[in-house]
Image (cartoon, rainbow over all chains, first blue to last red; front, side, top):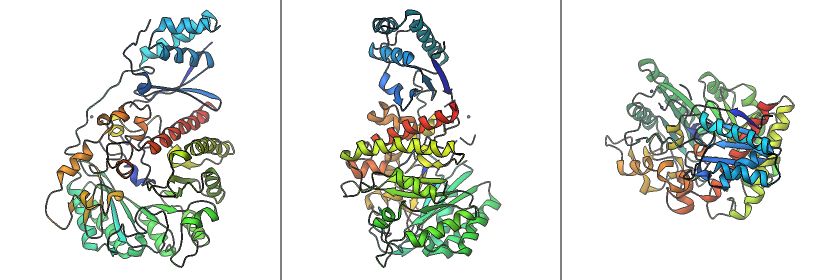
Length: 38
Length: 460
């Protein structure tokens, strides 16, 4: 019987092309986790 | 078998139960696992025993668990450790931001507003400065400044902000046209956004925003009585009845991107009802965020946290309810990209205020971000003067990363918040490097809830 299910396994030439947080919506509660364009 | 006696468990692994799921986040790899009760018990015992596999197995068996079952779970954990997706080791690519490209600007095109919202961090539009409008000259110089300092970055972002930017509409259009000119002679791409209270939106303005692919942020706090408590027209009336039809019309037209963006305060701690209200109005892309203003009677305080944290849990269930109805809703803080999120370097440097991201006032003054505008000690320079930036201020922000804040280094949510908001820290604690604990507690709960929502979607 399997006890653990891996649901997410991401991979965290590292560019600044992603959008900055403040251009999205917040302006007050910055977050980076909801943004890679490469 | 594994012995991890020197492993910093609280900083690198987060095991929590949310509704019906036991969830394990491996902080350094970003891997997320759903585990059954036995595996959760084993992982907790492993943490409690300071990383001793034998003691963890013994603890589970002594608690009445079947030996073979415990060994199965233990071997799965060992395999994931080997695989680098559980109890993984930290990798800290040290990022030097001292010569960072500038890639985003907040253009305060109007330090004046046609509303007087009580909770406005911009002092109802003028940031405590003289009421003023940005000239085309300053706007164009700001774009030149951005391009000049953007180094090799191709995607540049400019947000029209204020005050109310539509009070300076002709200049907004001129700046956009200038940006499009720059695009024809460089490899730069401008992504424009506009944050508005919607009062002045009309067909011509909306059509222009569509034709230029300008993303819009449309302010609305939720239920009529909630919105009209703080979002007040200059004649003292509430704004809900005036702005909702305009927001509807804007969204109907299909802008390249939009958010209905609201603020909640300690006077509507049941804010999931406001999220539901906004969704029922027909909007499927929204953000609702706590008011900022340490020490005010509207900002969320420590005593409000139990209700706020519970509300974020209710919000997770609300979003899943809509998802199950085939009506997906994008709630900004719960839209975590868990699979294709940004690289570690980006996560460690957060919003980039002061290094990658700056704000420009109508007079051309440069600040680390929109929330520092009006605080003269943080003024970095002026786009009208052909002088360099105050690099000592810029360096303070560049050095203020996840890796230099001990509290952040110890926090399991660090790779999602990026170290928090410099301004929140400054206005709460008088120091950009001291995390604002109330904001941190809320953020951790949002991350827990957002992960739960994503897992439920994937598992269904």
